[in-house]
Length: 436
Image 1: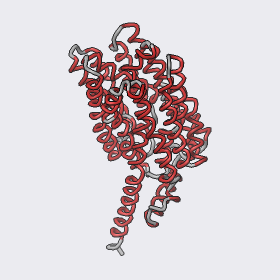
Image 2: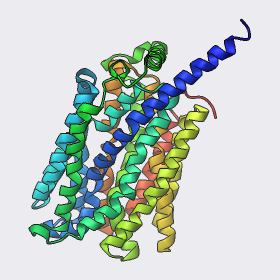
Image 3: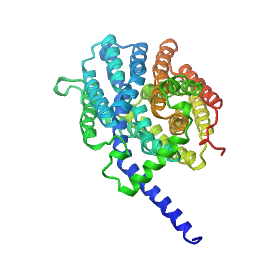
Image 4: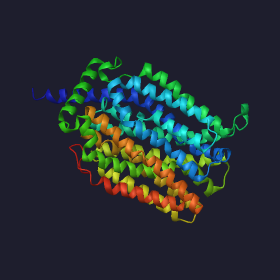
């Protein structure tokens, strides 16, 4: 009997590895493709600004306010959207989100001035509300805690792909100026909004609400996965299972503050990056789009490495804090160095910290929240945090209007990233957050 036990243990481990690998292959590519389109539709306004601001008469402050107001719509509808996903099911709700945001994104061609631009951006935020936190919640239905940061890292690299691929794509679409009577920025919104509608329809047939509904999972792997996830939920803090706990736990609000601070830096960076690169290089719109892809390419590598190391060590807080500090350093250097090349390299370094921050961060709340508490808490953290998506672009536009360049705004973004690194260190360590 002694000699048989290791075989049984290895067999169980292999079964679990096969189940997780199968889920990873099934879900992550499709959801990452959806997030690629979502992130592109969210930030392509930065490229559109190279033509749109003049066409619509937008000042830097008008643009910053309109770009950021997306997140007010996001904030208002985030928690209700996540609770609806938990009630209705991920398949229907994720499909609904994608179809509606695609239609609203395409409607951006109708913007005629500052007011209509701001209104459409608000509606886009309301339409997309719930997608990212919905996927975070959805992953808790499929991935054991020790696999979650890596899965989120692989999913989140889609936002970098939207910069790597979407930047030159947006540059090409801007060249369609005058085709069929539309400006280049209008073609950009039309061409990049349509895939969301198509993918939303595909999601209805492709996604399952959870492992119990997955006919593509072999019976043994399905049983292992359901058992492993049920066991984790049983071990989770019982105080994190209700909507009230998800909304009023101190840890949730601390993490909301951490998220707000890093998102302020992240979206101030991403929405204004094309204009910053334009100012540094003086290049054409197409070349600016190509240059802008570089920080996202560098960040994509950082995301994968940081997420894998965080899962391997089981440590979360120091990974999050380290990324915040790296982002702060890169932003601060980019705002002070005299060389355009040096400033651009510093921006690429900042991108690593800003985006590699996300996968280990989302492993913190999912370690102590479950059930309705997870739906509400994740939605709250993301909605409050994404108010930083309004603050960052607003501050950058305001500072550019006052001082005529981006340096002061970049310094403020650096301070926000540094504060996020300090605040996350106050988060109480959970049972899944181990020392490095």
